[in-house]
Length: 178
Image (cartoon, rainbow, N blue to C red):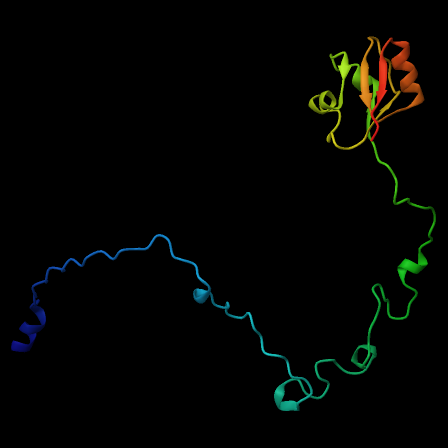
């Protein structure tokens, strides 16, 4: 009977008050120095030893598979090699010519200029009105559209039709020399 009573009784032990430990000072800024730098894990891999017997895991065929052109020594292929088939780059016809010295212009038409309300139009005005993207690149004015008011415009190039339209409207076309 004593054993049963002991099992049913709860033993209450006094809880000790936790002693307050002084707070550790945390360094907000750690100094960076060469002696503190370390190589990250996995940065250096062991060299794969090939052809050292079956126990190495890279024996017999030395990870090259069996037979064929890729298993042989001195197997160097050019870019676009298609296993002896005539490569696509040689099958496609080559026509035309692209010049290295081509000058590309940002194009602005006269109908777009008629929407600008200023009488003297420079590259800055074209940029602010959103007709060109970059002031440093070349700008060419084309003759698509009509001008009603006289406009003085400066650009790097003009088409013949644009030049005639600007002058017939009573304006001036100034070419910027680069």
